[in-house]
Structure formats: C-alpha cells, structure tokens
Length: 364
Image (cartoon, rainbow, N blue to C red; front, side, top):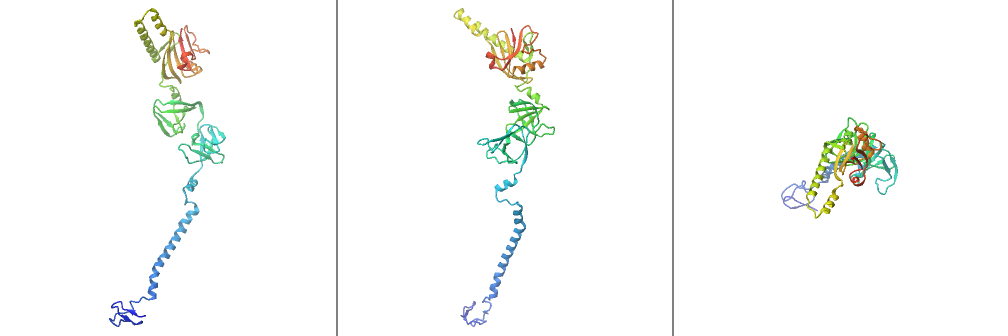
C-alpha cells in the first residue's frame, strides 16, 4: 500500500523506516496496535471505578434506608407512617359516627362527658372540620367535642349561656393550679358559659371551638346581666334608693314635664282637654335597663299610676331566692311580709311582659 511522509508528502514503500526524499523517520507517524489500546484503557478504568463506587454507596446507604422504611416514596405514605394515636377526653356528650362527617353518616353510639378515647386525627378537607378516627375501629368523633385534658366535674350547668365580656379576663387551659394561660378575652367578646366547677372556675367555649377556664366564676355570674347595680328598697314605703331611685326620679321628671305641656296647651273646648288628659292619665311609663344584681339580670323599670316595678330576665323563684338572701322577709307566695302597702314578686303580665319574665312591684 505504501506510506506517505508526514513531513514532505513523498510516497515511500511499506516497511521503510525513513523517507527517501527528506529522511524523516516514518516509524513515529504510524500508530501501533498497542498505542491504540492504551488510549481506551484510562477511560474504561474510570468508568469501572465510578460503577464500583456507586454500587458501594447504594449498598451502604440507600438499600439500608429502603429496608428500614426511612425513604418515603410518596407524600401519602409519609402521612400514614407519621400519624400516631393520641388520647382525648370528651368535653360534652359526643356522638360516635360511622363516617367523619355529620352529613350522610350514622350515629353508632354516644360518649358521656369526661370519656377517654384514643384515636388518630384525620386531615381536614374543610378548615375546622376535624375528626378523630378511634383506634379500636369503632367509628369517628368530631374534634370539636374533644380536649387533651380531662374536664372537671361541673357543680352548676349553664347550658351555653352567652356572656359579653365586660372587662379583660384571663382564659386558662384547665382549672388546675399549674394551668397555662392560653388567651385573654377582651371586653366586648362573647363567650359561651358551659358551667361552674366546685372550685369556682367557669368552663367556657371559645370562638375557635376550644374550651377554657375563667377564675372567680361566681363573681362573673353575678354580673352576667351587665354592669352590677345595687338595689336599695324599702317595702314599707315602696321607696327605691341609689341608682334605682335616681332612675325612677328621671321617669317622674319626664312625666311631670309631659303633664305641664298638656296643661299649657290650648284646647278647642273642655271636652278636648279632658280627652287629652285621659290619653295620658293612668298609663305606665317604662325604661329598659340592662344591669346585674347578685346574679339576676335587671332588664327594666316601670312607673305606674300608683306603683313602681322592677323587671328581671329570671324566673320568679330565682328572684325571690336572691332577695331572701339579701335579708328580705318574703312569703311562699312572693309577697313581702309586714307591709302596709303591697310589695311582691311574681311573673310579669300585660305590658310588663315585654320588659322581663319577673317583676318586683310595690304600691297601692
């Protein structure tokens, strides 16, 4: 085949070691089979080393992790692996349902207040709609009925009575002495009162659906109707003193002004005058008032032709009991004893029913 000189390009016969034209060595220009193999040795060795190292890493780390379960192939698998059962207590009577929903589910049973349950909290598809799947597989309980702390026994049930907070008050996680402060309810907030404990804590439902406890519960109950007010009352004379007396004085002043205006008015004749007087004479004048007195809700005052009334948003029995506790001698019929004028406590009637459930009236 011959070979060409890389230096001058002259043709030379095979096997010649030097160029016949310029004398340049032809041996260095012809790659040998050995040189060609040597070029492939280093890349192949590098690839082999990488394969060995990769296999070693997989065996030492990845394979071990997969066998121990620490490598999670999906988010769903991770949720299942990390979900753990927790202990809860029912804060009220709670339903056990066959599905984690109140709609299209069957009630399987009921749990009384204070029952302990164990279960896994389920992810909520709707904010606030959280359920716990019972570990025994017997159904689901709504998280809104549960707490991580066992509730105390309630000495008095208040049935979710609403209280508009009248001053900032601390809300504690439990009724225990070492409880944690979880919130401070501001004036104007509305809380639902569940009940009063034997050690004078109020259990309340919070706006977020949780539960908390307020210290000095009896003091709070005493002002449920609003700002506290004193009631100074003399059943012998039907006289009210203090703020109540001042409010009746305002009503009296208003009525006198009304009569003076009638008397000063010009009428067509005496018949017209008498008719105008008759429209006012004998009618009652009322004033709404939202105050509290020893746990009672005072809701209004009434000035009648020859008597006066206080109205309460409480039952007659409760009003009678409170006034007895304040030293008044009241018979089983609600009438104040040893009085020349009538003074008594009874259910409201007529126009007064619009101002309260019970009235304390005194007069002729």
